[in-house]
Length: 153
Image 1: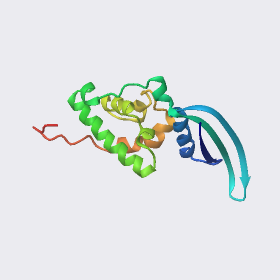
Image 2: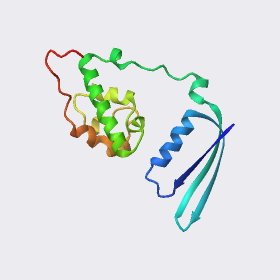
Image 3: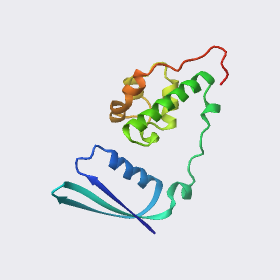
Image 4: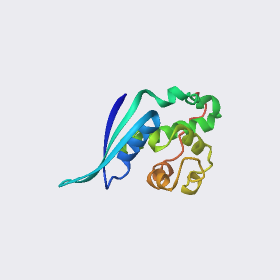
């Protein structure tokens, strides 16, 4: 059994909570204890998570990794690759893991869209109002990838 501690400020913007939720999804959780701690620095939720060392996804048989180069046709894959570069920049700018911005599955669905708008983003499974509100402008403001005639990918 392993232990991990999380401290989440009461006024957290969501990043600390996302980090804890990502951890919880990836591990077999045995027990969680929580306490609200208040001092001169503010109030924080403190979580003590007891978990098995073996990752949950490995024990239950995680999804097979998708090779999007084979799944998507070439123009859509080029757009997908461009969106991944934008996601990488957004993740670095926001100080987040790339998959928190958008998963590869979500990016593949975005790449299939004729035009990326907030409304079209909301039609994709996994992209809700908060995610679209927070990240959409990065993807809407960036032009399509430059295609060089005769270039080989």
